[in-house]
Picture 1 (tube, helix red, strand yellow):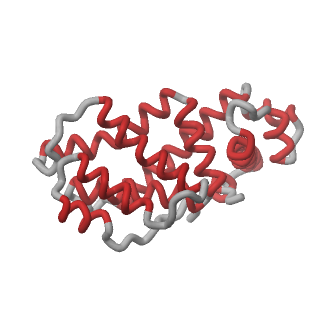
Picture 2: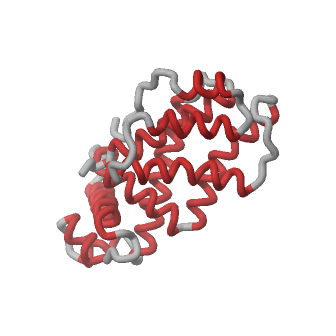
Length: 212
């Protein structure tokens, strides 16, 4: 398993490193068992700590679920925002974000599975993901790039396409071109011409990494 949280806490104190180890362990348990079936005992065992140590850092399973899920979402958003600083066109930004999210979530399968499960289980996280997607959609409408009327259903469908793509990639039902295909469909859905959608969605992409 890719220890994303531990890698970022390696220069911090013992307490922070233990908390990070618990969060990485939770990712693995959530990916394997699903959030609903996961237990505090399994997370503590996976982190090689006592249950008491778990409760020194988290009140209960719900708290570590929220901590892990929202930290994942923040990490992805921060990496995407940094990588898109020089992208001005809304269709370029939208395509880039979709493709990189899918690549990030599938490059670390346990992490990706846990994040997808968390989005379905946590309405607040689902709203956050949709809000992130909506920002560039609204930008495209203002700039005249997207020819649609934006409402909550459209944004939810847009975000769901990305999450389903991650799921299908992780299940081995889709291949490496999934991100580009989804981005092209999304751009067409938003009113971008077929030629432009294909050109933008299939640009060469250098995948981002979760671990520095």
